[in-house]
Amino acid sequence: MRFLLVEDDSMVGESLRKALRQDGFTIDWVQDGRAAEVALSSETYDLLLLDLGLPSKSGLEVLRSVRQTGNRIPVLILTARDAVSDRITGLDAGADDYLIKPFDFDELEARIRALLRRQAGRVDSVIRLGELTLNTTSREVHFKGQAVTLSGREYALLEAFLDRPGAVLSLAQLEEKIYGWDDEIGSNAVEVYIHGLRKKLGSDFIKNVRGVGYMVPKPQ
Image (cartoon, rainbow, N blue to C red):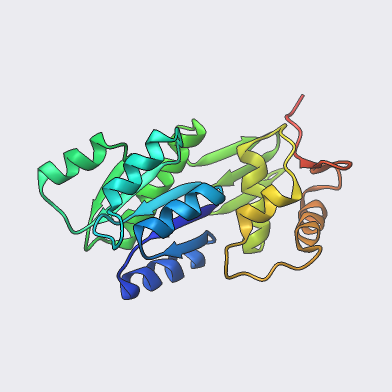
């Protein structure tokens, strides 16, 4: 999962980026509203974490612009503005959730999981596909009743496939899911992680669609 974090406070931004990366998410971080709009227009993200008090363009302006373009990305506002009127304004502008600073990181994680479930149309934290289960809360994976240990990027790739079973994902789409701006991408990095998943889940689990990309078929 790849998130855009928009936060002008360097200490808060660095802390959030570090903690979310430790949770296995790919994080791009910008510190003003105009940079946020550029990122959102050029990249594909699974979630937007948005402060309101930003330089150059406010978080509310960014949010309204996002919704006016038809972008349905889940938006979680993170702000110190705790008045009820501020919360109403943010939610009416198109935010999906609103969290007041300072907040507990565990609560942030829970709200992120809830937004991602809602976006994917799921009602709980467990994704099931045939004999495979993936728990997005505990990040545990089981296949044929046995626990499977995955690296962070193997997990991120598997989650990307399970979010869209039957869909063919290109190398570029898969790279977007697991790499941020600061990450160095090897020439065959995605293929290496796919090879690792195939070793652990079976050689036929991920199909190669020649010249297009990869897919995890839906169970028959």
